[in-house]
View 1 (cartoon, one colour):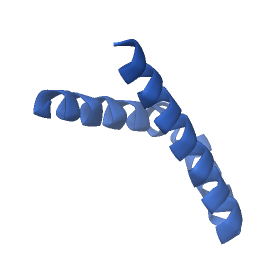
View 2 (cartoon, rainbow, N blue to C red; view 1 turned 30 degrees about the vertical axis):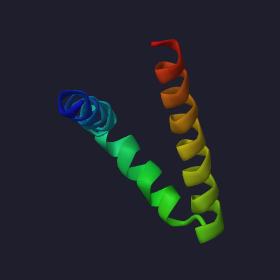
View 3 (cartoon, helix red, strand yellow; view 1 turned 60 degrees about the horizontal axis):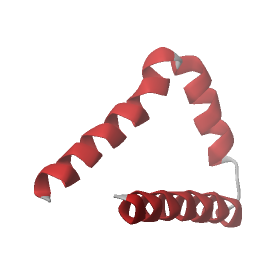
View 4 (cartoon, helix red, strand yellow; view 1 turned 60 degrees about the vertical axis):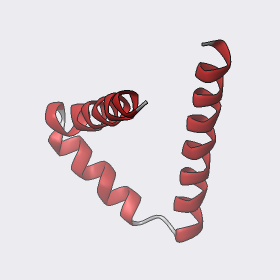
Amino acid sequence: MKDLLFAALGLMLLLEGIIPFLFPRQWRETISRIAQLTDGQIRFVGLVALSCGLATLGLVLYFS
């Protein structure tokens, strides 16, 4: 189980690093736009991301 957790963490870091590595200028512009959002908008984006992650995890666990 610990190996799976570290594999998931490594995969997350790999995916999180692809965009800033390949497109640093666009990534910086996107982060600047995100910084201008209200707290409510950021919370909504976070809620959507959490929901998608939970649904994905549920599907993976259900079908494995």
